Length: 192
Image (cartoon, rainbow, N blue to C red; front, side, top):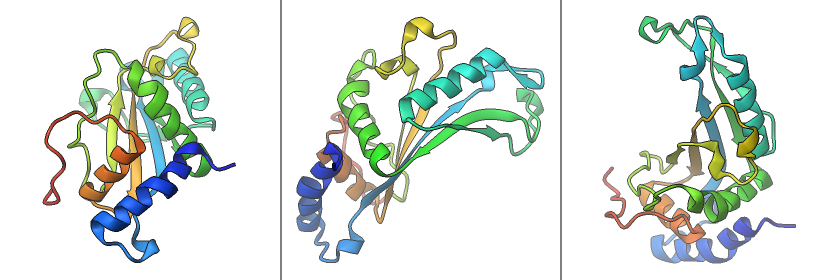
């Protein structure tokens, strides 16, 4: 069965993109490629080790939210001010593609974002030059899958939505049509 968000993309978003940007070639159409969730564990570094409870909590929460096993990321270089050495585990990430990506986006837009405290809309300027959108969440409790009564370590996460064949203007149209609640700030300009 086709995920609801993918069906919406195929039936509503693609025709609008084709008309608005004059995209005759279907291969030139912007498409959602992947969603990357990442959590930095900088606060829980103790000397050379990561606090075991914090590490387990982050791995369990990311696995619950994404539906697949996350991987630990290692520091690329040493930074003495942050007490980090090259090769030490410093974060956790998971990349979601395919049907899981569409299901995650559906849950993010319809369930998680409305649960953010004092929410006034997402920043419409958070696109990079290639049209990928990045946002942050302050606590994992906005996702209904996470049982906050069993959580000992509250952490945020960084969510990046990677869109292929795009630029900020096209990506903005794609995400707005999918229901992403942007604030009423000025729209993205193509000269970013």
